[in-house]
Image 1 (spheres, rainbow, N blue to C red):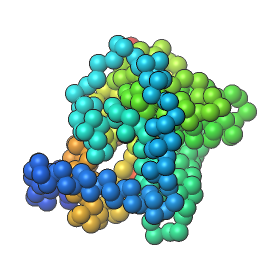
Image 2 (image 1 turned 90 degrees about the vertical axis):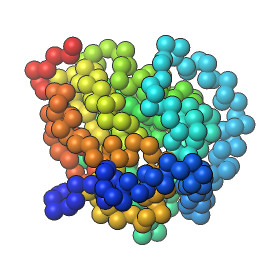
Image 3 (image 1 turned 60 degrees about the vertical axis):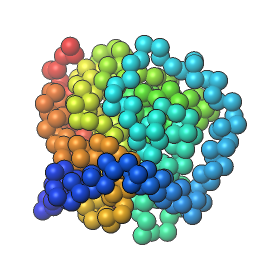
Image 4 (image 1 turned 45 degrees about the vertical axis):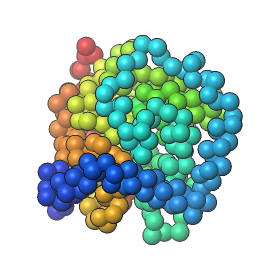
Length: 324
């Protein structure tokens, strides 16, 4: 899908008057507390109205004994960046808490439902379409075999498992997939969800400096991650992806599309609630992602609207590039 003849960003993002007014509301602590709680309730109600057992899922994980795995998954060398310690997604501790991890799967399914809210899709159908739309872009532009995959910002592993199964089913060669995240809480849930041990490793690491070997992956994905980051962190991750990719390996980013009519025309209540739980919204919606990709030495291949709310941006490591 073409992205021409559209505004470069929503009016409620950046330095526009509307954006400044929304930001003032969010910076008013009593109002912010109300908005944060409202954003959370909207998500839970969307989920439960559509058959996603939000509270039951939470209770099942909370009573599973999964908390005992945290120490085994935590990398003691990790220093959490300041941006990662900010409240987001209506959690005071961001992703560094069990509540966020226990609710992440339900929230992810609810997010997919919002993409096609005019259609009568069940949540499994919406989730399958969301993942499939991304995989279709990869299939259309990546002709070479993909053997080693890294899913950065893997959260509780929904994106990782779907991507692994897609390539495992569409190729004759075995696929090795690694999920990487900065939250050991999320990784504990991801490991538990991976009942058949399909994923080679769940790694607790900073995506800007993974300490993984250079030239070791054919495909790296960032699925619904960079809208949660300051652009400085995103550029650092792109640079690390360049190091980790084999020559002619691919970096694929799927995330909110600033040019989407759905995103641009969100009702005021919804975009205010969204900004209240996404501290880097203004940075993301005014960020030239393609220029950042090229600035680190990757080759931009295509940007396409892969569904009504999201875009996929595909880039490649040049054949003659050497990892530093």
